[in-house]
Image (cartoon, rainbow, N blue to C red):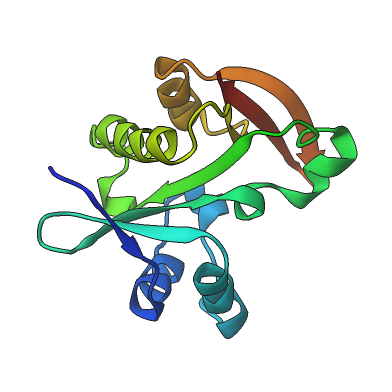
Length: 156
């Protein structure tokens, strides 16, 4: 499957916010509301589509990829490129994650040369952590937001 990056549009944002993941990944479900649509349109979010221009997933860069309470724990004190990503629920767990992440990392490396890449993941998301570790990401700082523990991971 070939991937392409597109500007985030309102149509893509509405589709992403309508995605529903099964437990325990329902943690990543969002509300479809004007504030969330605005966030996806006004921050550094990008759509990832396939050959047929169908939405496969998305990624974001910068503060949009950070969990705000992480600042209190020093999780974002270093100057790194933060990324966040999400894949369409029907595609998760089917072996597409590796090529999806490889494509995003290639774009990040070409766009932001000589920068360490950081991502933040919920600690319960073993599937994602396993994938990130395949790409050489190392666990760094853990912090808690309400009942969820997050881990930052770095790829140097």
